[in-house]
Length: 455
Image (cartoon, rainbow, N blue to C red; front, side):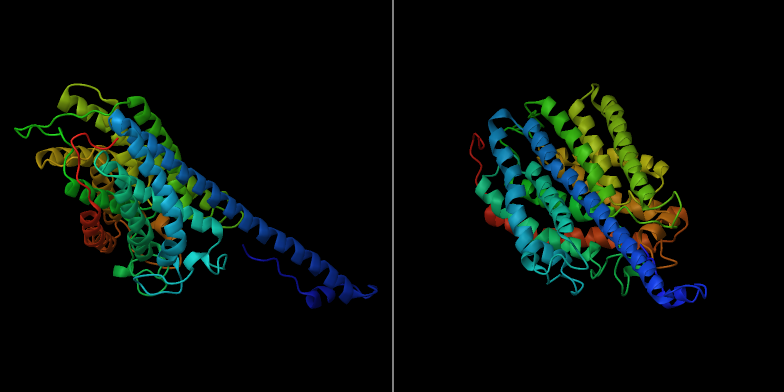
C-alpha cells in the first residue's frame, strides 16, 4: 500500500499571511498524516499475516483428513500403525523443516538449485518472510509426506517410515519447492532474472511440487515393499482388501476438502492487495475465484468417477467417489488461480479419467497402493501441471505473476507453447529428482513384511 506523503514546506506555503506559525502548523498536520499512514501499513501487514496464519491452520487440518482417510482405508488390525505414521509426519516434519527444510526451500539470496539462509529460522522475521510463512510452508511439507504414508500402508514399520518421512520433508521436498516457488529458483515464475522459456513454471499451489513429489515417493515405497499379502492370488487375479470403515474415509475426505481452501486460495500468501486502488476487484477476488475453481474441479471429478465406475463395475462405491473428488482437487491445484471456472470443470472431468486409468494400469502390473495415493496424487498431479499450461488465461497470469508484460500463458487460450514446455520440464525434473533420492532411501529403510502385516 502506498504511503500518504505530506510535505510540511509545501503545506506551509498554502497558509494565509495571517497564520501565526505556518511551519509549525504544517509540520503538525503532516505528522498526523504519517501516523495515519503507518496505521494503514500496520493494518495491511496484520491482515495479510492473519490470512496466511488462518490458511496454515486449514492446511494443517488436512493432516487429520489424511489420518482419517488412511485409518478407514486399511484393515482394522493396521489402524494404529497408520495413525502413528500420520502423527510422525507432523512431529518429525516440523523439526526437520525448521532446522533444514525452510532454508533449503526459501533461504534467500541463494542459487537456483538450493537455498542456504534461515537455518533454524535465523534472521526470521525479515523483510522477506515472517513466522507465519514458515508455518504455512511447513504445513505443505507434511502434506507431501502424508501422501506417501497411504501408499505404503500396512507394510512398513514406523521406525523405517520415520527415516523416510524425515528425509522427504527435510531435503527432497524443500529442494523442489525452491526450484519452482522461490524467487531464486531456476524454474520459478517469480525469478527476477532469466525465466525458463520466458515463463517459468506455473504451479501455483503444488500439483507438481506437492502432489507429484508425494505421489512418486509413495510409488517407490509401495513398489519396493511389494503388494500386501493376499492382494493377488496364486493366479495373479486381484483380490479386494477393503478398508474397514467407509465412514472414516468420508470424514477424511470432507476434512481434506475443507483444508484445500487453505491449500489453494491461501497460496496467495496475502489478500489485501488491490489491483486498482479503490475498485471492488482486487486480489481478494482472485482468492475467491481460486476457491471456486477448486470446488468445481473436485465436484466434477467426483461425479465423473461416480458414473464411470457405475458403468465399469455395475455398482456405486463411495470410496471411489471420494478418491475421484480428491483427484480433482490434486489436479486443479497447479492452475487454480489462473484459469476460468469453466476450465476447472474440464480439469476435474479429465482428472477422474486419469485416476481410473492409472488404477487399471496398477492392477495389470500388480502394483498395490491401499489409498491409490500414487495414482491420485502422482497421476492427477501431472495432469494438473499440463492442464495449467493449456488453459491459463492471460489476464489472470499477469495479475498473479505481475511485472513481466508478455508472459506466456495457456496454449489453448492463445498464449503459445512456451508455458507448456516449461511445465513439461517440471514433470520430468520432479520424476527424476524424486526417483534419484527417494528410491534408494526406500531400499535402505525397507522392512520385511510378516505374514500378518504390522498391527
